[in-house]
Length: 238
Image (cartoon, rainbow, N blue to C red):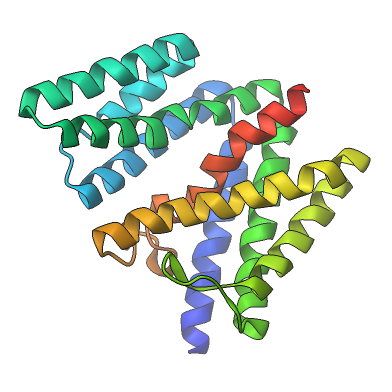
């Protein structure tokens, strides 16, 4: 069991250090990695739901990085093509999911990067604080299920632990504003996790892949970051 935890912690530490390196890298390098992440998440989600046009995700991200208007147009046109090609409305809806989740949402990471490396790092540290504290608080103290059908191991105790850690970090980073931001940010991080879990439960899978060991796949690892990035950007702008 101890070896199992060490494996999880080692992989988590490696992902964390690599993410920090990427966040601090020059913009073209960061852009390339986000594009790669879009490809990987698009592939994992497409494989899970039985959708073959996984390349639609990075195409949507690329067009969105030029402008959000082009991104939305690309998303709709690619989804129309998928539905027309198979003549199934189900493929149209699957394309909307893949393009939005693995493509459009990732463009907000690029926007944060352009605003400043440290803003991106602050978001990363917030997400990690919520995830890690939720995991260990739930493991040590968890008794009351939070959303049993979506995520059987997630508990209210874990949520409280993650919320406290995330809120304290936001207050440290942003002062009094962090108090106001903490509730929507923690809730959005939770919904990002539950959204991913919903897809997995509907498809009857435990993880999107096993490439990251106990952490699952890239979709499993970056779910909360994908959801919180647009909200964090919005809060910074207001």
